[in-house]
Length: 578
Image 1 (tube, rainbow, N blue to C red):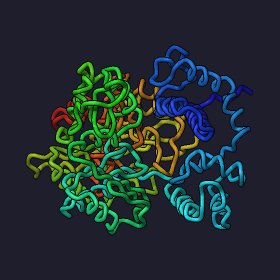
Image 2 (cartoon, one colour):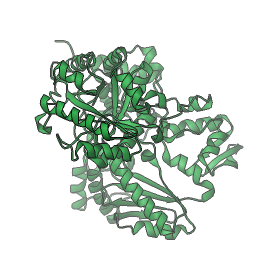
Image 3 (tube, one colour):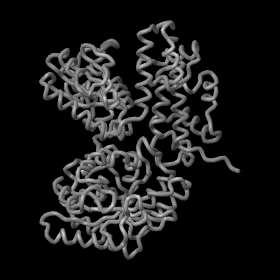
Image 4 (spheres, rainbow, N blue to C red):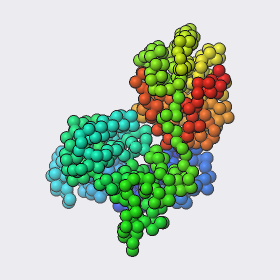
């Protein structure tokens, strides 16, 4: 029996683990960062690494000759010799200790060497028994702090969905602004960059009185526990079970601080390299001329725009700041003009109370009109999905007539009937061709048999793509964030088939889904695959999820012309052949 092919996910896991072990050992931070960056670059890659030649791997950001050799070694042997060597020296469970606030690699190493602590559970047991306080550099206070930190680390093991994080951050920012104690307040970090999940919140402010701002923040009703507070910074644990860092910065340095704390770390590292090439240095306080190796005259700091300008480039939208070519594009004036919310004219994928939604067809249509859109495709589930009360063919045709009746009395707004039709295990569709032909937009999706092989799943989805009645493929990965892993599928083959057949792919804004990676959406654009934003709304209140779909589009470098949602009703009908 041949050895199973090593997956991209396993390669990423091993490289990430190597970086963590090197950090525990106290190795050079640049070496540690090299593994972190390599893992990030490979994450979400649409092609299988086993299919890529060494020279192709070497062209990826952060993948030099050494990292290429590591990847090839893993592909050939299923492991990494250097990693196996280091794992004999340090148990893998120690890595989890780094998630605890105030721990750090040196303390984690000390705990293992002195008390054989190699897991969070073992750490908590030792802290409860009072075994940490007598260690060098610990003490009773730190012991209790670490015990609390261990609880927090376990509670925060899952990252928060961006929609929830946006809601929490927006509420905090609003309260801060209304209080009068701050002048400016902005959520930074991965939330500002539009990432699908958020590990913690970063709130950046300017204030007339920093100490009053800190006091007001730490006493917000959302705060469960204050982890630390100083003159310009406070860290709290919110009742929503997420950490929030609050910073007060000088107005003159706000732009520099916003740039720094928005990240990503990889983006900021390259900005620092660019600054050094120009004889400058950059930090959270501004960008400065270097004089004899030290920071001298301040060049810029008030706004992000002036800092990027000082570095010889256009301002880069936060969603692009992942070190995926955006800095080179900004320097050569080739940044995309990203899709904006006002460019969107309608939605393709949502549900009514006929299946698993909460509102009637007309209510969904009116809510879509209230969004300022010109049209909407209102959909439901097909017959096989019994758990969602999938529609029989008779009910399907009845609702198509209801949509037509709505249009007869509607002015300036069009409603169409879409359906989320199950892709059966063998790739056939859940309705006959005659039924499919009556639907305005057929959205094909996998909802069952997730555990079949990647080859079977790929063939299954491609068969649906090749069906002349299928207009859009939903749920490319089938994942549910924090709940269900993606099913196995060869994304590159699927994208190729979608491009060939001009079948669209959806960027799903349902917070738990977001089930196409931004890197995959970017690759789809490169291949000429039609793309659509969808809310997958199950109530009139969920049309706002279009913002999450928009985040994915912007992180994928998509422009107005790349998305069917920007077309008029007439243009959509022409595209669909209706």
